[in-house]
Image: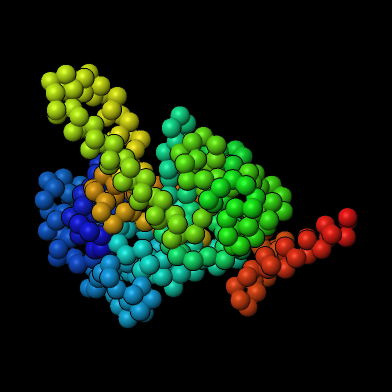
Length: 357
């Protein structure tokens, strides 16, 4: 029921996913409103789509934690409860990001050792067919070094399990590539990542490198990641608007656009349009959760449902859980402060290196 455009685009996206990919969906929200929207499709009765009533809605402006505890019959909380009960496999929503994360943690918890889930968005690369994973892109506005390390580990396994990247190149987003760049948290995270075996950590990258074929997983806190993501979306919009303005100014421009239209459509609609990627998974939650953009179209919702189905088919959650469980055993139990043993691990290895010298 959330999102900028309400349930209409969500229903349309579910219908498209059912028609084109045979993916079943449960629409969670006001039953009467959803029935009316679904009835607009002549073949609705033959599609694998059902409705589960939820009497409350969490708006974009509400405090996530308070809303989840106070609105026990909210659509997002009920959706996660359906997954917990085994009646659904994943949650897909364009609603309040904080509420999605809060409901996911409240109902299903997190994966072993994870302090905070992170949104993993896909950024298209210029020459490569495999996009770059950017996380966190909006779930956490402030992070400690050990949390950035956890994001890197989750991004590493996500890139392998969902994107088929054999040895993902992982980098921290910073204001320069030199080791002296970045703040204390970035530098501490870099030192920890450099110490982890089996991780292809390549150091720092700058914002201009995110869409280049030099990295597969880019790690930053959610405040920076969300700004990067929306700045890139705005840049694509700037290019589209500029091309339109130039084309409409002359007959030659219109003819040139007509000739280039097939290529431009493929580039902008299939590669640069955020709707083509559907939604971004909230990695670290105990259940599959796909966060669609608040202003998602029905196409974006449909592709978000497809992303959720791929998570189920590829057993991504099981692979992430197994990898993190193994790491948790190696690194020790979670600290009282949520540090997950990272500080102790780093200090231990630092002392070992000093003794070797």
